Length: 160
Image (cartoon, rainbow, N blue to C red; front, top):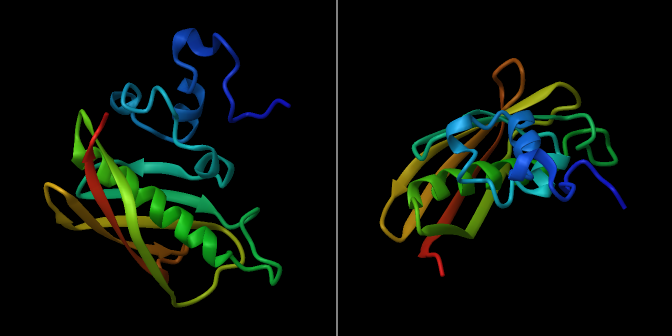
């Protein structure tokens, strides 16, 4: 089965996820870091597009359309996917070469619903340590109203 998230053999001149990274708004200087795995199938399927990328602050958008629950509002799990994507990527950048981030805790409070438009997630570092990184992620609607607040903690480990 073919899908737009699985690279074709030999695609993109030896960089199988180049198109996905570009479409997701990942800056060119980050492409080598994500060369082997892209942004992840779930993040790509949910339409997450990065606007800023850094360990201290990371921002991305995600459409409500296609990510709703049966009541027609943005699914609570979609909030968490956006939060985990942002927090984990930020922690991974903080970890640096030869290390990686592994999520160990995430929780969220939903404040209001959204039934259309784009949701913006902004991850802000709370703690960036040698072995732990914690981020607060605030999701807002197009009017800037807070939809949810999440907190994610990642364990920083040496890569094998």
